[in-house]
Length: 106
Image (cartoon, rainbow, N blue to C red; front, side):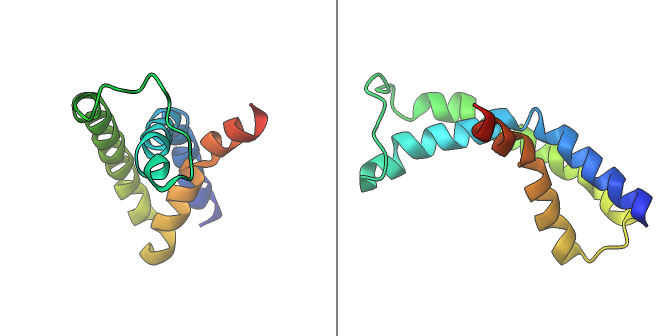
């Protein structure tokens, strides 16, 4: 079981490397629209293109990453003797490790 758990951690860490891009897109979107509207962040002054670029670029990138993440975790989940209610949140958090590492280092 330990070897299979390390495979799950490895898969999600590797997926977290390209996952930095969707995490950054989500942060950029949140900081420029909902958080800026609530006064919790300051909007980028050059961000005046509206929502169309997000629908054309951001949504497909996020959807593609979510699909690849889910499809690559499905077979791993079947091989790991871990409750699904624990496996999926832990996998999502492990996928975020490279993004958090970059935030701390940079």
